[in-house]
Amino acid sequence: MTREYPDRPFVGIGVVVWHEGRVLLVRRARPPRQGEWSLPGGLQELGEGVFEAARREVREETGLDIDILGIADVVDLIERDNLGRVRYHYTLIDVAAAAKTHEAVAASDAAEVVWADPDSLDAFGLWQETVRVIRRSYDLWRDPAGS
Image (cartoon, rainbow, N blue to C red; front, side):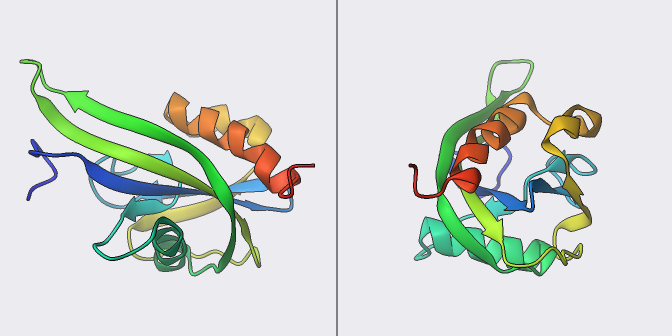
């Protein structure tokens, strides 16, 4: 099935990766949103758990290994065309994670990677839902035990 004008939603995994108070952003190398900054992530594969997908996507796009902290949020991304038809529909499960090292490299679907200060997110032109999820995940990174 094609991603454009699908007959059902796709499950996407986004990963908010933290290291030393900075969040990992990737510049998308392919459509949709090619050239835009976002979180590492992609589609969940058949037979793959959410956390498995998160680890795989981060490793493929950045070479990093991560420790999963938990689910940060779930977001619906539904884009309609001029006639009101659903052009794209993703259910995005955003996972919070901690990087084991800071040595990220752009690979796979990433054209560029950067460790961003959470106070400078406006400079990257992120989707506002992405900014909201990053801010929400901060508490999971800062206090994984929830105490």
